Image (cartoon, rainbow, N blue to C red; front, side, top):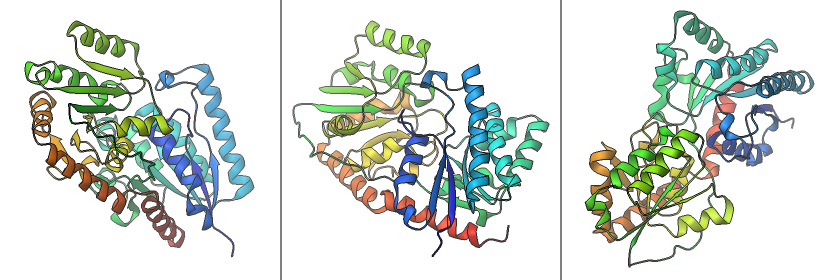
Length: 366
């Protein structure tokens, strides 16, 4: 039996970010038993601080990536091309070139959005950009989003049966949780950027109520902006906040950090997709304090396996205090989250959803 060919565009680690992690998992997954998976990189930067910035190296690398796509389309003649898209003007134009190249070879093209701000950006764009978006997406057979409540993002461009929901999924390796009854251990894990709300966390915990609790707080991630790093670190020092900051961790080190934590805090203030760290926290059996962004509420059920904040400023510390004084409830929340992870967010769940999407696209007449 000849396997259908699927050309996967995307970045690969390092660095370990959501999109690169997703590409790596897909390429190494059991999908390879049903499809011939071909990869074309879209990486055009040498470090994270180059994200969103123009330079000659990135221009040259992008041109090389476009040529690489054309070469693979000529040589492999894939049945499907899967292309991730951005939700900024410059980013979308860059990705649109991949889409138009794929369309020129009459390959069935699927796009995938790993965020949730696409419609806000598209509707706020000028008339010419909106026309370009619509014209580009009209060449595609469908779109993949990360949650059911994100399907509306593409209702202006695709029929409902062309919008596929594929939540993130991975097999997390965990370490036996280290019990600690003397104090409660908080964990933030994510890049230190404005949209993740880390500075809002710092302002919230700079309160007498928080400081009266016996807590340890560890924050792990990469600083992507020098000014933001200076802002946060200065605030920590000026207010004598008891918080340990570590650089990006992976593998066993990352698993160990999660095993030594009691509560996971991740409070983005800008649109998200379906954050991998939420899945990892669920797999580690941690109750999660978070915000309603993107598809987060399809994983974190308020009052069940975590707490959805209406306001970081007003509700974060009181939520921490609530779990601090109700350790049994915190453990129950973590247990429910772990069970939900096992049921819905393992790698095979993501693979099955992608397989379903690919089959429908292959059988479509578009």
